Amino acid sequence: MSHYVGVDVGTGSVRAAVLKKEEGGLVKLLSTSVKAITIYNDCANNFEQSSQEIWAAVVSTITQVIKTSSISPHDVKGIGFDATCSLVALNKNFDPICISPLHKDKNKKAEREDCRNIIMWMDHRATQETELINQTNHSLLQFVGGAISVEMEMPKVLWLKKNLPEQWNNIGALMDLPDFLTYKATGATSRSLCSLVCKWAYDASKGSLTDHHWNDEFLTQIGLADLITDNHAKLGEEVEAPGEAVGNGLSVSAAEELGLLPGTPVGTSLIDAHAGGIGMLICRPKDLSSCSVSVENKLGLICGTSSCHMAVSKHPAYIPGVWGPYFSAMVPGMWLNEGGQSATGKLIDHILETHPAYSTLKECGESFSTLSTLIEQLAIAKGVAEYQLTKDLHVYPDFHGNRSPLANPDMKGMICGLSLDASLNSLAVLYLATLQSLIYGTKNILEEMEVKGYDISTVYMCGGLTKNQLFVQMTADILNKPVVISDEQESVLVGAALLGMCASERKSLTEILEVVHCGGTVYRPDVGSQPYHCKKYLVFKRMCKDQLAYTEMMKS
Image (cartoon, rainbow, N blue to C red):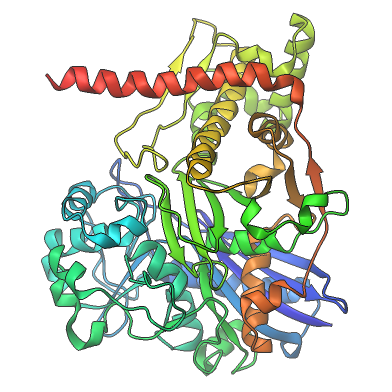
């Protein structure tokens, strides 16, 4: 029996878990710990964090989860990290350097825990830089869905250079947040192939595990030639596959902070969604024959603040508006395509919190449970199926732009069918329509992937929204495919811990995935709901088309 620690740095919290591996390869999470982290949102499109605060939360959650799991430091055989794909800026001493335009003067001291040196993944300040990069039409852009996203790192890096020249001249390192975590744990500055190919336009176009590199022509064309110097030292010279052992394991200082042993193996990191994808791949439900089908027929759907739609193939698939194909970003030797929605859980919260009946909802206790009960009661009273309550209420969910398949950050949300009703019942129906709209967005992404050759038979889900059974069941209904939820519902934490297992056992992710497993539950689609959802989906697509038409009209 062996134990591994997994750490997940999400949008609003840091979580840690201990994963137990039993004989026969069955894995089980023993305990988890969570600590909230601050999001600074002074401007509409600016979202910032502090790496100092995040690392302090990592220390807190790991020490807590070791305690609650009743294991000793000697029992921990490896550690793995995942995080959001946020940009961390460090100065030449590898201390935090402020990237906040509103706080660059009063926030200079690196030792301050609120030093804002992280531009978060959902930060949209770099829209002009995104357009500039896409205007180059560089061949690398075909590996990010045809156009780079404002949520990727290179537009943010270019924004820093153009808008904060004093900080730019003192930059010592630019890291994806997952790589920052392995640096803090080990002192090694290696980068993960996952983060670089997915978010940094790193060139792995040859599909080789050994032949990949920074593309100097691309960096020069987009105005970042100064990052080429010193063998790309600020971007990272050493690049490792996810799960590869980082440096010499935990450094003496990190081990002292964490209460663990120096030298404990640390695995090369993954982006949080990709860790969730890995964690789901080990799920093998007994009552699903398709669990033996190739990994190429499975869609990983990671639903939290935002959503990611992940599928892998032996051959690259070029899908407009869908990120990738990324070589070896999740499963070694395979090409990953990644669709996404910029706001899912965040949109649900927004819809609820801005409704006049929200205060009444809070008084009723757990929101999702209360709303599900209301929806059930309304359907009975009206003599219709629950999903039919939204017949005259339609939501288009791109309140924070469209990541896939339009790759249009300027798209907006839409609601059609509002009345003067401000009751709790009206909130319940609007909530239902919002859930449906998010799943129609997933259907839209899946259609585009299937047009380019994917044949998806089963959907594997993880993330916070999997605790919402109404959302899970409607995903099965609308996509008309079975949906699998792992018994170990914290798939992201499982994936992170498996990285530590790779480093400890000196095995690749592929080898680890072949020998570990857990069970799961299957949600099967209600075929009877298909005609209704097909009509609603047509409305969804028409709303998108109409919005684009309105935008075009107003240009003149």
